[in-house]
Length: 380
Image (cartoon, rainbow, N blue to C red):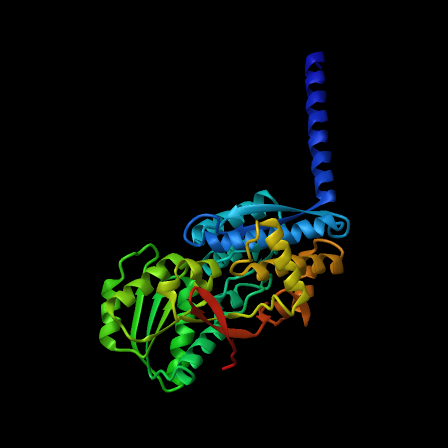
């Protein structure tokens, strides 16, 4: 054989060995966790809130020795709160980055799209905020630390009928998995209670002019108007145009418009709006209180945003699962998560049901003078 060829092959072999052992060393020393959240677009504020919380949890875990002596390495992708982008991001995380666990998505659409990739690959997908009832049936490896809209829709509809004394409601929702999940549950619950849906309007993501739908709603003369946008920006615009039209109904909404900074920035438009969300006790819950302090210290005094505590808990649930099972066997991690009961988290005591959904209490909120105030817990 040619001497130069032998030398060349030897060099290639050495390079391949170096690459192989460096990769093996990386696999041994770190635990890769994928993060799939919207980093751009209207829902970026939720993605940033969750991403910050994840960073804090990982920093705490790594500084205290990691998981079974291994540090967490995050691989973050932009799901854009969009099914197509969520699916593409999941493909990369699973097939190129080879992660076994993904935190995300933030939105229901990107989560459902990602689940089509992660489920057949037996990759754990745990969402901090996807609330569509469809997520319940997305697969055995799909979990979340945020409750299904099947509960939130019932609470909102029941509160409107029994506490706000509404007999007629108008429903105005975005054409997304998240918003339509809430719409169906709300309509069914309100109708079963004896109420009447006098207007049922929808809009497409990206719309900015809602005057046609607003006129129909005003003409129907509802007692309560239930508005469910996918993100803050269109929701604020809808309420602005509703107020400009002169409607006198009471306003209710979903958790996306209970964003604390959003409420401050749009205090006049969102004044008096009711909403429903899981309650996080940042005073009495030691874990939540510590998370609040860490968040303020890391991000210049800023308080945790929407779904932050849910994302924080997702990381620590992963830590508990990997430590308990001794590695990244996703079958064992899956079984551990299904067995979670009364686990102490920042969002409170968490129990995971047979569908991978958390059992959590919900509180009614009301926006007053730019502040999201607590009306109290409410059970249908």
